[in-house]
Image (cartoon, rainbow, N blue to C red):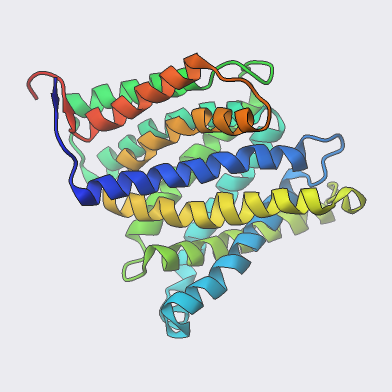
Length: 306
């Protein structure tokens, strides 16, 4: 086994991706505050719309402040918002899936993301597989399954898991399109344009749902705790996390970046540990396996001859 030192740019891209996953992981338990009560404080459609709108309201003025109002005027809003509508659909699938399962189950199903990402790059970019990528992918997926652990009642596959899987597929494709179909925009700009599109799509979904008689938010139950959870889910788990994610995808590609998502169950466990949960060595071992898989897939650990 040979271990190579990563270049500074690749190391920083991986650290940025890790930060994105950590922030996203923190948002999953926050969503539980809003969707787990019976009846939920915010049903999936309303929660997705509120989350996207809050993220867009945070990103638009931030983008204008950092890059100037002219950057907003020059942006290709139509294609960007079309890609964003895919993100909104993926986010809706995630919340609907998490409503029917658990935060940990949502993270477990996300272990399929590296496979989806590599498949997309093979079909659309002509990526060639080598032994390192295959071994790294296997290690990452196995590590993600192990890192899921067994808490919150264990795991159970069903319609919730299928909805989470649909979310992963749609989100992975939309992430690649965010980088490839919006040339000339910085990660902050491309993220803002697509999140605005996601917010518009999510609000349309919510409006149609309310007209169709689906339940809306339980406003009497909405207090400061619920607002804080929504802010963490929207601003942290979407706005900030997505900017960091698009930065890493632009440097590493969707396949290599998606390997990091299998650390999410471990991050969720650590966050729940801080809130009174318990440590799980199986999850910690799974996270270590994911880390090794990332290094192997990116060529920093070479197993024999390659």
